[in-house]
Image: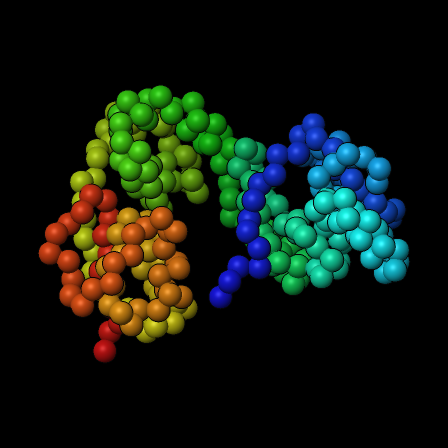
Length: 255
């Protein structure tokens, strides 16, 4: 299944964004743009983005046509068919932002998911992100290779790890002192079926962490898509005989 859109984070601080309309919807978008630091201006502004919060259907369509004729990308409140981009529900743990989008299918569902995540994600997430940013030089010194850094951080940030983001975040300095490079590991996974909904929690976590995916030809793309986009996929009839650096998974469907 294709995504309804490509998720992007737009840096709008100090930049003009057009907002058209009055009423509660326009006021909410004005507050959202203000929190992002955007310059909220009228239709004649020289901008690349616009939000149309006009209730009248004919007026809204006319405004969208005028803006698109100028090459401006438009979001139209409650009208997915008139949107060039959508605005997700946001969980704010600055500088960590979690965006939930349904591609315009249901703002209510996105809001419900945001409320659940608000309860799950601790307020310390932002502090952990800032400390990791401050430790970049130390991380490069301890793990010179980008792949080594990614694997080491992945293990440290995993559930129960020393930097578990859903825990207390741990002490980065203490972790760096004792952290070791993972040279290579192969895990064999027998999948219950070709349905990704049948993946166990452990299998889903391993897929999200894997560097290499060895799989039989009948393992469907719907399961492989649960892995990182940059994980290497290798079709094979038997498990690999060598272990590559990082985490390798061998996937087959149980018979």
